[in-house]
Structure formats: structure tokens, C-alpha cells
Length: 140
Length: 145
Image 1 (tube, each protein chain N blue to C red):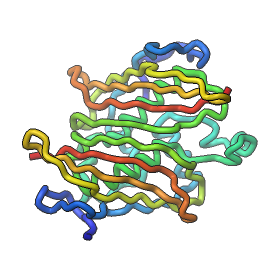
Image 2: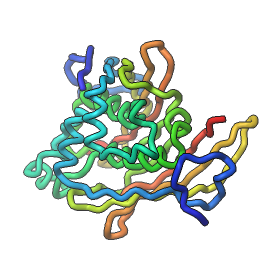
Image 3: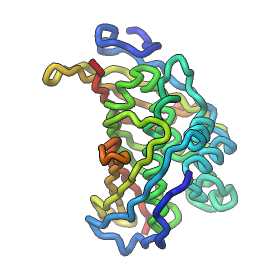
Image 4: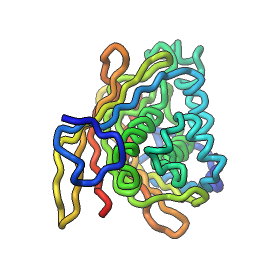
């Protein structure tokens, strides 16, 4: 997987404020990229799945999460606490996607912080294909 | 109560039906492959020495890998309706670790029509071989006409 345009330095967790927008990232979902993803998650039964023709939506979610997390310097021990996702449109292999992340919430819970990041993904025609929210628990 | 085994039409779906479960053996090799495929090289997933020194005590699978297995189950049951009209909300309750056997299960909670379009609401769970809950959540599928 190759991020086409996000090479800025990671922002520190302490610097994040609600509304902060992570640098947008773009990925070309080539056949080889999707093949690698399918190999990693175990190829589903072809009879039951049309996903070989289309990019599995969880692959798109994973690339988006990676793009955001690579833009962010999180303390060791940070863990993924919850995930919301919504899929709007089939994404054929070879599509280019544009991923955006935005800080939706940053809360203190004693020795822990909760960081909620909104995710939004469009195809090359600016059509929304996926959105969601990831919540990460960050230790103090 | 039946188990759904193929892409279904509305007439095939009933409240209480179980979705076809997915069982996966988690290995460090698979976690490493997923790190390569997703680009997520957080050491908690791939560096056994580092992970052993954290409160987790060892490496854990990516949460998004477990969600890939959830999506495999939903795709098997609902096909393209899931891929272009699926909605998911899950909480990660415990980590999945190398050598774990993870079972993903789902059940149709209810079916509702909104403006003539059927929506299927499912409950989702994942457990390891010891019965510990790994994830819990809900999914909604807008069925294609």
C-alpha cells in the first residue's frame, strides 16, 4: 500500500484539539494491494463473496485508520476501543480513494484519555464510499 | 431458528436467524501479514519483546483484523448489500492474541422497513476459545432491491 501524499511529520497527541483535521491521504487500490490484503485476512469463499471484484470495505477502513494513525504520535499502550463504520458504495479494484480524519472528541477519564476520530473516505469522483468513527484509549 | 448460508433475499430472512459463523486461528504470522497489508506496524502487534513489557504482556492482533473477519461473515450472508449498505458499531472488549481461536457469530435481531426499504439489524459477538468476549456490537444492512 502506498500513501500518495501524506509525508508530513506526526502530530503529538497533546497538540490535538477537537476539530483538528489530519493531513488527507490518497491510495490507489491496485490489484496487488488488494491481493495482499485478502491474503492477510484469509481469502473468503469465492462462492459466497463478490469481494474479489470489489475492494473489501474493511480494507478501505484499515487504510484510512493507518493513514490517520501515521499522522499521529500516540503514547505506547494506546488501544483501539471501539469502531463505527458505514459503507455507502461499492469500490471496484483500481479505484483511488481519498481519506480524511478529524478529531471529534478528546476527553479525560482519570488516568486515561479518550480520543474519537471521524473518518471519511471518497472515491476519485468525490463520492462518499465510507465513513465512521474510531475511539482510541490513550494512557496519560 | 436456521443458519443463513448464502446471499439472501428478504423472504429468506427471519428474526432470530443465525448468520454463518466464522472461525479463525490467530497466528503471529497472520498478524505480521496484516501489518504488511494494512501498513499498521504498531509494535504492540509485531514486536514480541516490546509487547511483553507492556500491560498486555504480549502481542495482540489488530482490531481491524478482527473486524475483517466480522465483515467476512456479513459478506457471506448479505453479499453486495453489506458492501454498499452496511453499518457497523463494535466495542473491543479484550485483545485477540496469537494462538487464539476466534469465533465470530451474528444473529438477526429484527427487520424493519423504512420508506419501503428493508433494513436488517444484527447483533454481533466474537469469543476466543476460553469463551472470553473479544468484540461485541451491532450491524445494520440496507437490503438491495
